[in-house]
Structure formats: structure tokens, C-alpha cells
Length: 432
Image 1 (tube, rainbow, N blue to C red):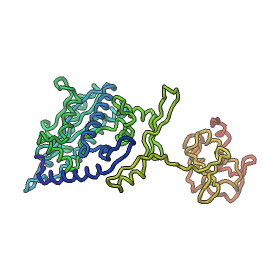
Image 2 (image 1 turned 90 degrees about the horizontal axis):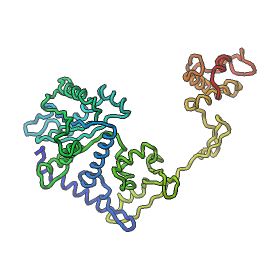
Image 3 (image 1 turned 45 degrees about the vertical axis):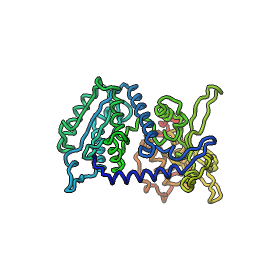
Image 4 (image 1 turned 180 degrees about the vertical axis):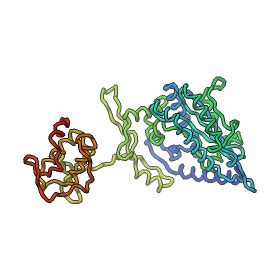
């Protein structure tokens, strides 16, 4: 069934057994409690209970999020055209199920990028909310199930687009009987969430159900992901690292997402540290705690030591900041350890605010000719023109060269006339 042989089952069981032995031989000491690396593994194959619990939490959290927005669930089924079902002389599929799954993903992404979904994104302020799972036919060819969350007034328009798009011979070449679009849930026990969970549950190994057991081997053999969802809430990689701190919260996945959005959970030092800022009602103060921190020494030890226990030690990395000296708004020095001296930091016109840019341009415009960098001057002048702070045409930086004669200078300035802003332009520029 599903193209799984007894040899496949034996090879996969052996592989999983060795992986579990490796993970259970690595221990972490938390004082009164010791856990193995397997306890921290989110894998549908190695730790299915932990993976299923997290996935169930994600599904319920996204569903609650969509419900709060007034979105309605729509369930679609998409099968692969006949060319993906063809077999060779020995009964094997000509196109590997993994390639078919990729083709289904690609056509699904193209469909959800149509103009109607771009309009929806503009209306909602974020992308499409969805769940997506793959399920094998008995032949081993995958088909796709997805639950989309749409505003009520979009459902029928999306349904029309769905059938016209996937029955088009130039795009996907399916017939209407092989695809499905369901948007009423009156006869479904448990509603939309129970409906999608029915398909998700089939992806896990079940010793009492031989068909489900073979399906779990199919996902492993062909390296096909069981469950995917939109990036509506917090990235799973972050959620897994900080969830222990919020495990007492209802729908902690939704809670973590809200905290990241409000910038209460911050990602620091190239994602090596996550901190949580919150108001402590008991002390009446705002507190900032580190909820996760990468420990490279721990990772290294866990790869080397076998059948050994070691304590977790979290040491905050020290990031040395360069010593800087500010003489004025535009004259800043930074100490270089290599040169063992302070060096002048360049002024970047594009990062200056309008009033700073105007002030800096005037300084250069009135500077002595021997001290000015003409290429830099041209860069500043072009930035002024770009922001409509100077009514002239931008020129190539190659045109900014030291002139042979210094004539037609304005007032006491030693800068050539071609580099001076006319009085009527300067005085029209707002000065803060």
C-alpha cells in the first residue's frame, strides 16, 4: 500500500531506532531533573506526541486568530494530473512522489498569488491564512488538502477562480471531479478544525490501523512534510525556543506571536538571545528577562559526550562595542584596535534627516577649497536633489573634479560657483 514495501519498513525502522538511541544517550541536568535530548526533539518520527501536541496548538491558535478577524474556513482538495500517476514496467511510479508534492506546492503557490488574493492581502494587511497537508493515494501519488480562511464576500469569487484555474489544460489539466471546494460545515462534527485534524492524524503511525501505519512510512521514505501553515503567527523556530516560559498561558502560540508583534519579545545579537520585557504587577516595575540564549559550548559537548550527564550553563556573551567620540553632528571618531588610534567616521548622506542634510550641505558649500572632497560633495548634492531640497539636476560623480580656475565665487566662499546653491534656493529650504 502507498508503494511501501517490507524492505522499506525494515530500513526505516532501523534508521529511527539508531536515531533514538543516539538522542537518548545525551542527557541534560536541570538540578532535580535529568532529561535526554529526545525530550527536546520536535520530530513527527522520533517524538510524535510532542510534535502532535505542538501542531494541535498551532492549528487551534491560527483558527482562533482567523475567527477573531471574521474569516471563514474553506477546504480545498487538489489532485495531480494523470501524468503523475503513470508507472513503469515493474510497477513503480515514473515521477517520484516527492517531485509530485513539489509540483502541487508550486501550482498552489501560483494560485494563491492571483490578483484576488493580492487584493485580499491589501484588505487584511497580511497574507493568506491557511493550513496545508499532503495525503497519499493508495498508489503512492500525493494529493493536497488545504484550509483557507477568507472573508465571507470573497468565498464564491475564490471558488470560481479555483475551478477555472485548475481545470485549465494549459495550467494543471484537472477535471472537476478530481478537485473539491467545501465551505459549509453544518454537517461536520467538531467543525472545520476537526475536519483538518482528521487528515493530519492520518499522517502519524498507528499500530492498530495498517493503512495509517503504511502512510507514516510513505512520508519518511519520500521526505514529504506532514503539515504546513501560513506564516501568520510567530515563526516556529522562535516559538519552540521560548514556549517553555509561556507554557501556563492558554493558546501560548498565539500569546508568543502577540508579544513578538508588540516587540515585548526581542531578538538580540544575531538571534543568539531572546529577551522578554513585561510589567511585574507585584513589584510595580518593568522587567526584562532572558528567555532563551544559545550556548555553543553545550551543543559541542552534546555531540562529543556519550552516556554522560552535564549541567546547563548559560553565560551571556560579551559583545565589545567600539569606543566612539562625537565632536559635532558630522564629526565622529571611532577607535580602531588594529590601528590603535581614533579614525574619522564617514558621513553617509542617505541616513541623515532632512534638516541634518541641509545643514551638512551648507557646511560643505562654505568650506575651503583645499579641505573639500568633491566626490563626497557631489554625493551630498545629489541626495539634496533626490529629496527635492535643491532645484537642480543631479550629475554623475565623475563630473565633480577640482576646477583649474577659481572664479565667480560667492561672498567669501572658496568653493566654485558650480558647487554653490543659489540664494533663492537656499532660503526656500525649510531649516529646523
